[in-house]
Length: 564
Image (cartoon, rainbow, N blue to C red; front, side, top):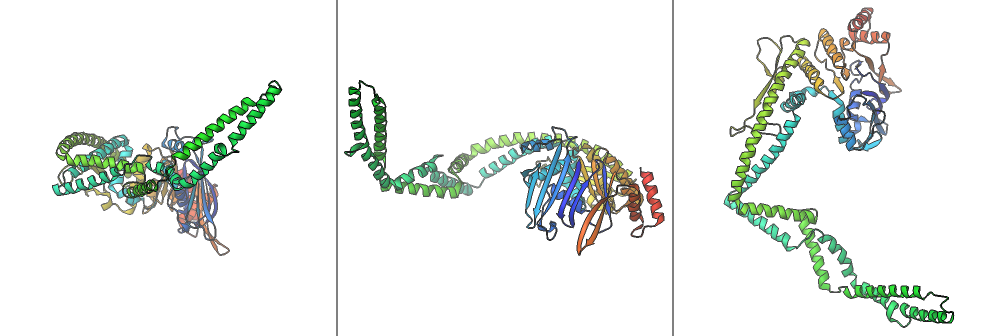
């Protein structure tokens, strides 16, 4: 659950710190007070797109912080898996998310004080919060989203993933055979291109470490004359000149031997000197050998420079690295072989495609059967919820049909071959039609709530947010919606923005949003309505408007009594 939300310099909010109930939290306030700003701040915290206009004028940045209690989240939940991937530890079951947006619209994101990406916040948000905003009706109307909702409810994701993998292989084979079935002229053109590319790469005689080897040798070749002179000087000083190091060591050794002969070996350092002399002779030999192996041939230098230029050219054409160029060569050679032996390849591919197509169709058929059973169960539950929400004669069906392509064959996608349409009829005698073609605003709101009520029971998302779910409904129906929200809040934390007193009466935590002007600046404030008298006053305002009457206060008191 969301325990606390802190907002600083966001839109019209200067500073705000709110604590919430783990059940039903209701925001109310006059039109234009900014009731949705808090939900927008929560959306931003959970990965929604940021822009500079969100930052309060005259401030450097907006900061939103949310503290989530994960006590009820299973350790094997997708949320914990995400946190584990990022090596984020959770102490005392608290997850603290923070997002900062500066005046240029740039973001910084943190999870338990560890920097993360906006994309990661968005993934976390998907596991934590389901936000039904005022524009979500449009999402509900999209067939693909309707399909996803049904499959999520039926836990059909594993079957879909298997189909997606098979379909990827199937489409790859179809593309391969399509390339092989080119016209003779197109095939000949491709063969010529592939042959040229393979020959061009082969001519470079590349190895995975070719570029590194050239980079290692080039400095030696470019500076070979200088290196030979330096090494010659070193060798001369060690070995060849009259007063060379080794000559001097030889003389020192003779002196020590004389000392030892006179002192009966008391000094005894000649063994160490002999070891040093032997080591220096090895150094001199290594210098001589390295010097003699240095190549001063300018042709060899030109050859290496030409090869380096050739490698750069090949990288521009075939890959960012030598390894990628070689991988491209292997792939192209394989394609060339297939084209040159296309008849045999086509026969083999046709066999593979037929086998995979039959398997894929069986998988799609099995998924379709499961999906129809799920949709039948789902439509009954949603229809019951819709009728509880005052549309007693309404019908809700889910049509599952097989999509057909231009050739009259099942159109297979990564989700199978089914198409789903949510069908709706609000009145007796009217046939069911696609939801988007018939539902009014109020009917759409109630249908969405019915879907959320059913789908929410199968969802692991612990927080649900409804932004003006009561649009277009009457007072009595608002009471029914409030009751549904209260039922939802028994199993998860619910937030709701409303202008209906009947819904506000069900709040476990009631928050009033006000807009004020101080010293020429506009502020949005959120005030907890935390005692009975204050709740009566706010609900009375919602009933009667700006001027609160004693009658409105009486109705507010009765409403709170009846709904609790």
